[in-house]
Length: 341
Image (cartoon, rainbow, N blue to C red; front, side, top):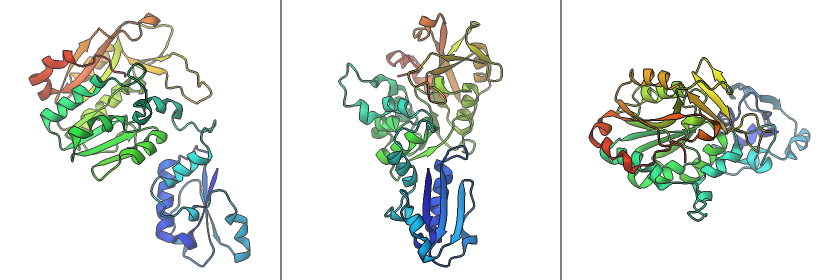
């Protein structure tokens, strides 16, 4: 798909904003491009360069009809806002087979606006799932919070009454999820960005508290994600995930991440990567790592045997801010013991 922009109409500043937007939402490997031209004399040297962005230059008036009849001419987007380019792409290409946008179909079960229209019998969300995080926020009173793998904003939706005016940053690897989180919930205190929890673009101790909910079992390198969450968190972080002590010979083992990769099958196999791949790190390697971390404590739970149908016994590990856990850790029994919704 190709976007077109008449920079002579939009102006240089708006053209550069659109290019930045293009760089954020699309990757060089995506089959998406942006072509820029102008119907009047402008200084094209002031326009930013980027991969998959082609600058045609000045066009004569009679040449404009070739480009003004294109399906996506960005000059027609009134009051262009950040992310509009991705919204337009999704509008015109609702389910492209060659660009999966990180498994967009799975996002529907993480969409609180979808979920809340079901009865409790069919609802995917367990209200207990966020109780630990709510309690940590109420007791520790962080002024800045990182929600790693924020999805479509469902965590924020359930926490907004306790978060209130605190600085809340949500990041997610799925562009499809992030654009929905922005549309649903972004405000002056809550911001949502594309991001990868194994490579966080934040400074050391930038947040008082970080957490990830119902996401770590899907992360390819969970140990690296734990390191990153610990690095950016001043008062510790919350996470829950599965580990195993046994050798699982019939699933792929990654020696670099110390993880078994459990592809349990999916109905959308035509996508590049299925979200039904779970990453199960070795118990020993996780404990070794956690013992080196600051401001955290952890507990081990064996109640939730999610992978027992596959013959795999797991040890679920929950990580908490140390100060909170020392004071209120005994209350964990009232909380949900599953690291997945």
